Image (cartoon, rainbow, N blue to C red; front, side, top):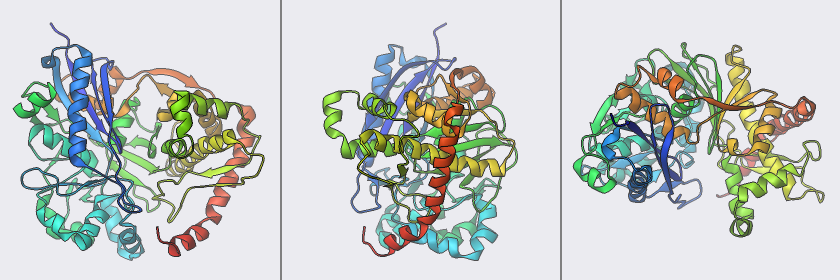
Length: 508
């Protein structure tokens, strides 16, 4: 019997990936392609949908070619992608406008208005179980209604990014449950749309533009003949609902039980655990539906993670990127050449703003003539770790039973020095799983369940994920980072007023 495989496709903010996995979770091939972030105005982050679809075709073809397998051996396909944002198509499936990425901030005034309303906490939060922030479809749709009504008039389907790609693969329109549960668009308790909820957001007239809701492991169509010709996939290959990217990361981190803290480092600082009791709290970022019956994902998050390093490199180290080759190795070497107690330089990792701290912007505090480039880089590494800890502390307040060991994934896991900083800041053992692309593997597991390899994603994680190594904290750095983090939090609180004043008195 020929071996069988599943494919996972992941569309992040600027990177599209496809990977092919066997039943043990081994990646036999993978490919990636960057797409441009379009910033037509301050706070607007968009992408060209045609370019996005072309990138998906390219990586699917490349992964199949690299694998050397017969495409008929790929038994199922699944998609994931960045949560929230907004992707609109017309009656013919053509883009109505650019897609909007979840880092977009144009609609923050709508968020501020809603959050001031007493009904938000009293009536809306019990239904949505999450905060509302500018990059979600709810405020983005409200903004479009007021500023681009013609775009909404031409819209047939409102999609999240992974649902858009699945639509292009299959020709069938669905919104997948775990993803839509993190958008403020549905009643998370009833797992369905709520007319009173949509009316409160002022979006009732858009109800018929939302496709039906599907389950993550359900069959949601199959590869069409035209897509088969473009990609090399076999027409008729089933496509599952896929999964919310934060759930994909949790699944691929091997989170197959309750109360295990997982951290994912990327554009967003994701900190989460799985529970059998939904959490509703006005200070919590989100409770969303997990792709297994009677399980919920409790998440604290903000766009404050490893992408801050990308910003620094792109802004201040372009020459070195061209000359040195491995720019990340250079950054790690520069950080390693400094010591934790050598400098009190701090960095606020808010290059993409913050959904949890209004009006926050990025910046260094404590700069003086002593500081060299390595100190700035260390401050970024530490600032990202502090942001994750800030969120994790909120989660531990809600759930004191959270594990003392932490599963960590994402860009930080490629840097030993950054992992050690995380371990020392948290004073916790870090477990790094033997997974390179958590998004593609996590969503591929939903396809594995769909085709009958496993009963559910917990069983898939047991078989397809293993811990590769652990990082132990250095107790000698505990006091240093305790003091630094305390200073970080104190200054964070003190900066609320200056940030607000700056936001009110400047044009972006």
